[in-house]
Image 1 (cartoon, one colour):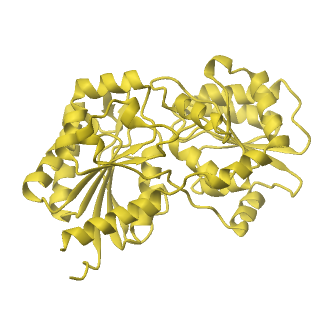
Image 2 (cartoon, rainbow, N blue to C red):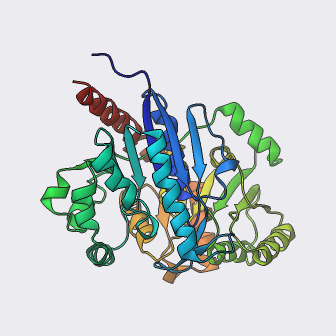
Length: 400
């Protein structure tokens, strides 16, 4: 029997803080179009419309929520109680699934969704739309083992993985970090796990990179350092230390720097960063639609170590320094330690974060980054191929 011409894939990305979830979801969606598939994304990101959305991919914007603590979320802009907004989100998610009738429902990172908001949809799929495969997509590292186990046990995550999901895709490599072992995932759930490898990102053309360098007024001899903190809501301490590093040291001859603060940095702090950048000749941006082009134009990248930023940097084989956060989660620190141990990056623990340390690391990478770039050629970027294979295999089994 021939496969249906188009596979319908519904993706959920709750997006309460930063840009990581939606960037990862879009990278997967772009690839699944070629399955061939049509992809509909449910997202709370207020910035989703700023990204280039390709053909056969669209999104349903659910009301935004903003994380206050690990357990508390408030409406991003609506003047309603949090419980009311959550009920609206839950209703939109379920209604969209019922109208779309997906062949696959892919949930990013949060097995129950924000405050259990995808549970009704997962139950509807099991009971009324069983031909749909429910898939949980996890990044390589969630948090420290003890914190993750405590969180998952208290919220019933292990039971949800067993009863509500058909497959679990881990967007990482088991030899780098093994969440099955680290997080005590039971055998009944471990059998559902596929390690996909990491998600590669778009590599811009030489012409694209040249255009970005021209936009930034960079000459051929200029070496550019890109400093990015993702969404920027918690990035100011890193940006502040980076700026101090070059306020207290002479900027190396020929070096230029571009700081992308992220759209969630407060207006007051952005004004401070802008003033200080102007004083030392650095360029500052809140947001750039073509981050891949900025990374391509850079000689060294400094970042906080989120999953997506790391994949974007290594995809372009750039030497880079991770300055991870450790609150509210240790995910970035663990990732930095793993990648540094394998020679893919340098990192600075927050306890060692000083202007002097940042300056020395950046200058070292500017002058000695070639080996790191060569090592990146062998990074396990297999996720998109593995994911497409899983989708195609499931569709073949479904039509037998």
